[in-house]
Image (cartoon, rainbow, N blue to C red; front, side, top):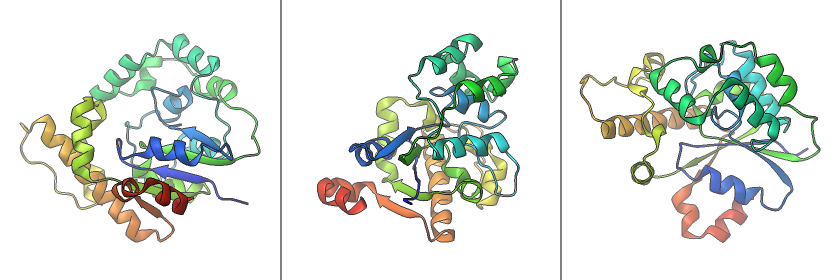
Length: 249
């Protein structure tokens, strides 16, 4: 039995491109960002009370978040472009703009829905398990990697890219995820011994750089703690994509 592959990385590190290349021959079912609130409604309701980039310790009980990735690992989630997925967004009046605004304000998106929709979503937005190998691609779940490894069986793969290249990509695309207020995530910062920012008047660029620093500190810690993690260097792949992709496969 081939292992399920979970591909993680920081936003704009090449995860989408690599996941599509690896799944292009049809042997793998690609599950793209199951935990993205704006793309998959099941991801939205499964992350109730959690931020855009959750940090869940292995000892915590987050059954909905755990079940989401178990569904993803078995390719049991409906596709993001399905009519049922679009129906749930329309029924709850949850547009991409509104979701991002709620997340930016720190408000729990599920509290704004005010409907017990999880059971309905689980019924409408899951399907039978197909007989295919699976690649799950996520940029939002990397901070919770130990939690996911404890509860879901998969091969963890992390793609890393030079932070300066990621930062320039953020700036060029004006991405909202370049600043998710990581300087306010006191539990995360304490667990990884990251010094909090002392100045309250720092700019958006500084906060974006700080966030990238936190991401890299967490990923480096996980790489040392879990020998099973396979790390792919984005810049190395770009030097000779054909040879490197063949080696990765």
